[in-house]
Length: 247
Image 1 (tube, rainbow, N blue to C red):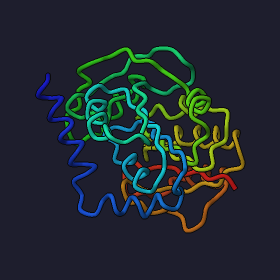
Image 2 (image 1 turned 30 degrees about the horizontal axis):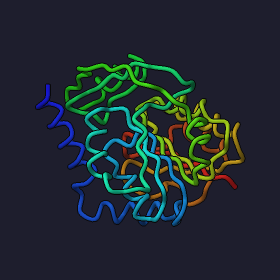
Image 3 (image 1 turned 60 degrees about the horizontal axis):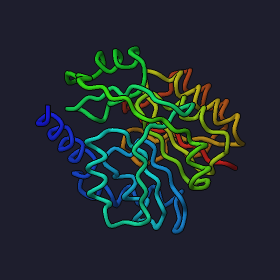
Protein backbone atom coordinates (compact mmCIF):
# COMPACT_ATOMS: atom_id res chain seq x y z
CA UNK A 1 0.00 0.00 0.00
CA UNK A 2 2.81 2.42 0.84
CA UNK A 3 4.40 1.82 -2.57
CA UNK A 4 1.07 2.53 -4.27
CA UNK A 5 0.79 5.80 -2.37
CA UNK A 6 4.29 6.83 -3.41
CA UNK A 7 3.61 5.92 -7.04
CA UNK A 8 0.33 7.85 -6.91
CA UNK A 9 2.07 11.01 -5.71
CA UNK A 10 4.78 10.62 -8.37
CA UNK A 11 2.13 10.29 -11.09
CA UNK A 12 0.32 13.38 -9.85
CA UNK A 13 3.59 15.32 -9.62
CA UNK A 14 4.48 14.49 -13.21
CA UNK A 15 0.95 15.38 -14.33
CA UNK A 16 0.90 18.80 -12.69
CA UNK A 17 4.55 19.84 -12.53
CA UNK A 18 6.14 17.84 -15.34
CA UNK A 19 4.95 19.90 -18.31
CA UNK A 20 7.54 22.33 -19.72
CA UNK A 21 6.44 25.92 -19.10
CA UNK A 22 3.25 24.63 -17.46
CA UNK A 23 3.48 26.89 -14.42
CA UNK A 24 4.28 29.90 -16.61
CA UNK A 25 1.15 29.22 -18.65
CA UNK A 26 -0.90 28.98 -15.47
CA UNK A 27 0.50 32.26 -14.15
CA UNK A 28 -0.45 34.03 -17.36
CA UNK A 29 -3.97 32.61 -17.23
CA UNK A 30 -4.71 33.14 -13.53
CA UNK A 31 -3.20 36.61 -13.69
CA UNK A 32 -6.54 37.61 -15.20
CA UNK A 33 -8.19 36.90 -11.85
CA UNK A 34 -5.52 37.11 -9.13
CA UNK A 35 -3.53 40.18 -8.11
CA UNK A 36 -0.81 40.82 -5.54
CA UNK A 37 -2.24 40.93 -2.05
CA UNK A 38 -5.41 39.01 -2.93
CA UNK A 39 -6.71 36.10 -0.89
CA UNK A 40 -7.28 32.84 -2.79
CA UNK A 41 -8.96 29.60 -1.76
CA UNK A 42 -7.65 26.38 -3.35
CA UNK A 43 -10.36 23.81 -2.62
CA UNK A 44 -9.03 20.38 -3.50
CA UNK A 45 -5.43 21.56 -3.57
CA UNK A 46 -3.97 18.11 -4.31
CA UNK A 47 -0.22 18.80 -4.80
CA UNK A 48 -0.63 22.56 -4.83
CA UNK A 49 0.27 23.53 -8.38
CA UNK A 50 -2.53 26.11 -8.40
CA UNK A 51 -1.55 27.28 -4.92
CA UNK A 52 2.01 27.73 -6.19
CA UNK A 53 0.76 29.90 -9.04
CA UNK A 54 -1.40 32.01 -6.72
CA UNK A 55 1.63 32.54 -4.46
CA UNK A 56 3.79 33.44 -7.48
CA UNK A 57 1.19 36.09 -8.32
CA UNK A 58 1.55 37.54 -4.83
CA UNK A 59 -1.68 36.21 -3.31
CA UNK A 60 -2.22 34.74 0.14
CA UNK A 61 -3.53 31.19 -0.11
CA UNK A 62 -5.78 29.01 1.99
CA UNK A 63 -5.45 25.50 0.56
CA UNK A 64 -7.87 22.72 1.50
CA UNK A 65 -6.84 19.08 1.09
CA UNK A 66 -7.99 16.00 3.06
CA UNK A 67 -5.77 13.29 1.48
CA UNK A 68 -2.98 12.30 3.90
CA UNK A 69 -0.38 11.67 1.16
CA UNK A 70 -1.11 15.04 -0.45
CA UNK A 71 -1.05 16.76 2.94
CA UNK A 72 2.46 15.47 3.59
CA UNK A 73 3.60 16.76 0.19
CA UNK A 74 2.04 20.19 0.75
CA UNK A 75 3.51 20.51 4.23
CA UNK A 76 7.00 19.97 2.82
CA UNK A 77 6.54 22.13 -0.26
CA UNK A 78 5.20 25.15 1.60
CA UNK A 79 6.96 24.62 4.93
CA UNK A 80 8.66 28.04 4.89
CA UNK A 81 5.79 30.03 3.40
CA UNK A 82 3.87 32.12 5.93
CA UNK A 83 1.37 33.26 3.27
CA UNK A 84 0.23 29.66 2.66
CA UNK A 85 -2.26 28.09 5.08
CA UNK A 86 -3.19 24.42 4.81
CA UNK A 87 -6.59 23.25 6.03
CA UNK A 88 -6.43 19.46 6.40
CA UNK A 89 -10.15 19.00 5.89
CA UNK A 90 -12.78 18.59 3.18
CA UNK A 91 -15.35 21.19 2.17
CA UNK A 92 -19.06 20.43 1.91
CA UNK A 93 -22.58 21.68 2.46
CA UNK A 94 -22.43 21.47 6.26
CA UNK A 95 -19.87 20.97 8.99
CA UNK A 96 -19.37 17.41 10.20
CA UNK A 97 -17.60 14.27 9.06
CA UNK A 98 -17.78 12.31 5.82
CA UNK A 99 -16.09 9.30 4.25
CA UNK A 100 -13.31 10.06 1.79
CA UNK A 101 -12.86 7.38 -0.91
CA UNK A 102 -9.14 7.35 -1.70
CA UNK A 103 -7.53 5.96 -4.83
CA UNK A 104 -3.94 5.56 -3.71
CA UNK A 105 -2.52 4.91 -7.18
CA UNK A 106 -4.62 7.61 -8.89
CA UNK A 107 -5.20 10.19 -6.13
CA UNK A 108 -6.62 12.73 -8.59
CA UNK A 109 -9.95 10.83 -8.49
CA UNK A 110 -10.20 10.60 -4.70
CA UNK A 111 -13.67 11.79 -3.79
CA UNK A 112 -16.39 12.27 -1.21
CA UNK A 113 -19.12 11.58 -3.71
CA UNK A 114 -21.45 8.67 -4.26
CA UNK A 115 -20.98 5.35 -6.04
CA UNK A 116 -22.72 6.60 -9.19
CA UNK A 117 -19.82 8.91 -9.96
CA UNK A 118 -17.20 6.31 -9.13
CA UNK A 119 -18.94 3.89 -11.50
CA UNK A 120 -18.86 6.61 -14.17
CA UNK A 121 -15.09 7.00 -13.76
CA UNK A 122 -14.61 3.22 -13.92
CA UNK A 123 -16.48 3.06 -17.23
CA UNK A 124 -14.79 6.06 -18.83
CA UNK A 125 -11.22 5.78 -17.62
CA UNK A 126 -8.47 4.36 -19.82
CA UNK A 127 -6.91 2.74 -16.76
CA UNK A 128 -8.15 0.54 -13.94
CA UNK A 129 -9.24 2.66 -11.01
CA UNK A 130 -9.43 1.33 -7.47
CA UNK A 131 -10.72 3.20 -4.45
CA UNK A 132 -8.70 1.05 -2.09
CA UNK A 133 -8.76 3.11 1.09
CA UNK A 134 -11.34 5.10 3.04
CA UNK A 135 -10.89 7.72 5.71
CA UNK A 136 -13.32 9.67 7.88
CA UNK A 137 -12.47 13.34 7.42
CA UNK A 138 -13.59 16.59 9.00
CA UNK A 139 -15.81 18.72 6.80
CA UNK A 140 -16.01 22.51 6.88
CA UNK A 141 -17.95 24.89 4.65
CA UNK A 142 -16.84 27.74 2.43
CA UNK A 143 -18.80 30.04 4.73
CA UNK A 144 -16.75 28.85 7.71
CA UNK A 145 -13.51 29.47 5.81
CA UNK A 146 -14.72 32.96 4.91
CA UNK A 147 -15.63 33.62 8.54
CA UNK A 148 -12.10 32.64 9.55
CA UNK A 149 -10.01 34.11 6.73
CA UNK A 150 -12.18 36.59 4.81
CA UNK A 151 -13.79 36.59 1.37
CA UNK A 152 -11.32 35.50 -1.32
CA UNK A 153 -10.84 37.28 -4.62
CA UNK A 154 -10.67 33.89 -6.32
CA UNK A 155 -11.81 30.42 -5.31
CA UNK A 156 -10.84 27.33 -7.27
CA UNK A 157 -12.88 24.15 -6.65
CA UNK A 158 -11.76 20.75 -7.88
CA UNK A 159 -13.32 18.03 -5.75
CA UNK A 160 -14.29 15.23 -8.14
CA UNK A 161 -18.05 15.61 -8.55
CA UNK A 162 -18.58 17.13 -5.09
CA UNK A 163 -18.70 20.68 -6.40
CA UNK A 164 -22.41 21.28 -5.79
CA UNK A 165 -22.31 20.44 -2.04
CA UNK A 166 -19.29 22.74 -1.76
CA UNK A 167 -21.25 25.58 -3.37
CA UNK A 168 -24.29 24.85 -1.21
CA UNK A 169 -22.10 25.66 1.79
CA UNK A 170 -21.49 29.16 0.39
CA UNK A 171 -23.78 32.14 0.99
CA UNK A 172 -21.34 34.94 0.07
CA UNK A 173 -20.75 35.85 -3.58
CA UNK A 174 -17.05 35.59 -4.49
CA UNK A 175 -15.66 37.83 -7.22
CA UNK A 176 -14.09 35.01 -9.25
CA UNK A 177 -14.78 31.31 -8.81
CA UNK A 178 -14.11 28.15 -10.83
CA UNK A 179 -15.30 24.57 -10.55
CA UNK A 180 -14.51 21.37 -12.44
CA UNK A 181 -17.04 19.79 -14.79
CA UNK A 182 -17.23 16.61 -16.88
CA UNK A 183 -18.40 16.67 -20.49
CA UNK A 184 -20.58 13.58 -20.01
CA UNK A 185 -22.15 14.89 -16.81
CA UNK A 186 -23.22 18.40 -17.75
CA UNK A 187 -26.30 18.36 -15.50
CA UNK A 188 -23.96 18.52 -12.52
CA UNK A 189 -22.30 21.59 -14.00
CA UNK A 190 -25.70 23.12 -14.70
CA UNK A 191 -26.73 22.66 -11.07
CA UNK A 192 -23.54 24.48 -10.00
CA UNK A 193 -24.18 27.31 -12.47
CA UNK A 194 -27.70 27.72 -11.11
CA UNK A 195 -26.38 27.80 -7.56
CA UNK A 196 -23.90 30.55 -8.41
CA UNK A 197 -26.60 32.52 -10.20
CA UNK A 198 -28.58 32.45 -6.94
CA UNK A 199 -25.62 33.95 -5.08
CA UNK A 200 -24.73 36.85 -7.38
CA UNK A 201 -24.88 38.50 -10.78
CA UNK A 202 -22.32 36.31 -12.55
CA UNK A 203 -21.21 35.84 -16.12
CA UNK A 204 -19.59 32.57 -17.17
CA UNK A 205 -16.99 30.96 -19.41
CA UNK A 206 -15.33 27.57 -19.79
CA UNK A 207 -11.75 26.36 -20.01
CA UNK A 208 -11.28 22.89 -21.53
CA UNK A 209 -8.97 20.40 -19.86
CA UNK A 210 -5.65 22.03 -18.98
CA UNK A 211 -5.77 24.46 -21.91
CA UNK A 212 -5.76 27.61 -19.73
CA UNK A 213 -7.76 29.30 -22.49
CA UNK A 214 -11.36 30.44 -22.48
CA UNK A 215 -13.64 28.47 -24.78
CA UNK A 216 -15.96 31.36 -25.61
CA UNK A 217 -14.66 34.73 -26.83
CA UNK A 218 -17.21 36.51 -24.63
CA UNK A 219 -18.44 35.92 -21.08
CA UNK A 220 -22.05 34.77 -21.15
CA UNK A 221 -25.09 34.75 -18.89
CA UNK A 222 -26.12 31.64 -16.95
CA UNK A 223 -29.20 30.78 -19.09
CA UNK A 224 -27.12 30.99 -22.28
CA UNK A 225 -24.40 28.67 -20.95
CA UNK A 226 -27.00 26.23 -19.63
CA UNK A 227 -28.71 26.17 -23.01
CA UNK A 228 -25.43 25.53 -24.81
CA UNK A 229 -24.45 22.74 -22.42
CA UNK A 230 -27.81 21.02 -22.80
CA UNK A 231 -27.62 21.39 -26.58
CA UNK A 232 -24.35 19.45 -26.54
CA UNK A 233 -21.61 22.06 -26.78
CA UNK A 234 -18.67 20.41 -28.53
CA UNK A 235 -15.70 20.01 -26.21
CA UNK A 236 -12.57 18.11 -27.15
CA UNK A 237 -11.54 17.41 -23.57
CA UNK A 238 -13.42 15.05 -21.28
CA UNK A 239 -13.40 17.62 -18.49
CA UNK A 240 -12.66 21.24 -17.82
CA UNK A 241 -13.55 24.14 -15.57
CA UNK A 242 -16.42 26.59 -15.49
CA UNK A 243 -15.38 30.12 -14.53
CA UNK A 244 -17.75 32.65 -13.01
CA UNK A 245 -17.07 36.36 -12.47
CA UNK A 246 -19.28 38.93 -10.80
CA UNK A 247 -20.22 41.83 -13.07
